[in-house]
Amino acid sequence: MNKMKLSRFLILFVFLICSDRMVYSAGESEPISLTLEQAIETALQRNRSIINALSMSESQRISLFSAQSAFDTKFYPSASAGLSSEAGTAGAGLTLQKRLDFGATASLTPGIQKTDDNRTARIGVSLNMPLFRGFGKESNMDSVYLSEFSVRTAKRSLYSTRVNVILDTVSAVYDIIRQKELVRLFESLTKQLEGHSKIAKIREKVGLATSLDVYRAEIRLKDVEDSLSSAKESLRNAEDRLKLILSFSLERPIEVTAPVELDKTRMNLEELVEIALKNRIELEQAKDELEEARRRSRIAEHNILPQLDLVMNYNRYDMTDDFGALNENRWSINLVSNTDFSRTSEKAAFQQSQITVSSSKLYFDTRQDEIRREVRLQSEFLKKAEERIAIREAQKKQADGKSELSKIKFDHGMTDNFDVIEAEKELQQANVNLLSMKTDYIVGMYRMRAAIGTLIER
Image (cartoon, rainbow, N blue to C red; front, side, top):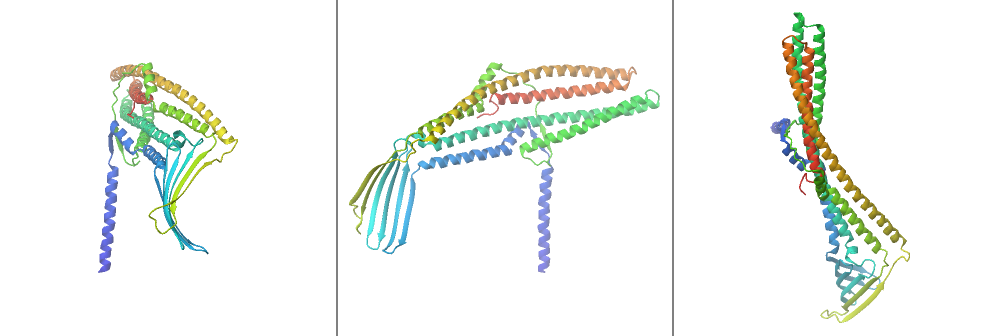
């Protein structure tokens, strides 16, 4: 009986697992339908590069919190117990320490200690303040400022990653649309050529066509079938590229739609360059790197100073059993120095920091020129794309008229099927070329918005 129940349980367990897998597989087989806006939004949420950039930004934020914690009030409890040949000892205490941003460190240390013979209670106050090296807010807050710079850099890197992911998504979506249109056109052309091949064979039988007409139609048909196979493979590759961007399973089918209307309103080049110089985050990062290099250079120059610290201590204590009043006191003031006289490494570090400042300044100037050049190239691309679109539209009209004329002449026996096939091929190619130029122009508009720094809000 128990074996029977166990068998039924195993069967039910296996059935549930299989059912879950079948439901999951069915869900995975359903196609994903996305508009261009939905694809962009999905990419911003699911793309692995963005998720990794978010993690890096969070890691830098935690590092900043750790650097800032160095200036928090610290509590250090202490306890001790031991034996020696003379007596046993036990003690406990607490240290409260605060580091100030200009360099001084203050501490308060109450404590008690007991031996076999007596007890000692004390409370101490100390202040350690650098007089030369280490004095000043900029020097002491160096780790905090460096962490803040790293946080800003990580946030800008996240922004740049988002921009690149959007551009990749737009490019992938319109590549899919372009490849789908190619597949559709080649499928349409294949059907037409199959019809021409059948008609040529029929006309050959009744003496209205030659074997050359049949061979010509079949050769063209095979060429188009090969192009159709290549177009389908390119479509699969384009879809896989988008799935990788969106972090979707490669096995799941995907369908995308996007507008192909053109917006030809553009500003002049001077305005575009001015907007880019104000908004490009790469230029902001280069400027921040220059300022950080200058700050680090000032720190390196400060570190050349000799080390001289003022150390002050004051203690009140009592060595009796009555701890009501701490009537004994002790104080000290010391000047402490431990500095390499030549400070060769510090001077070399300062010289290197000056070289870094010069390099950062050159990089900033170079980045400005690169942004100007990028905007100019993108503007010229859009201008030429508009001209090419106009040419492609004119070619499409010509190819359409040629196709209609060749069909009329073929129907009246004034020409053979070669002219019809060539005219249809030219028409289909004109449609493909026009669509390709339109999608290139739309993607170029997105790249222009990225080039001037207005693709997404900060």
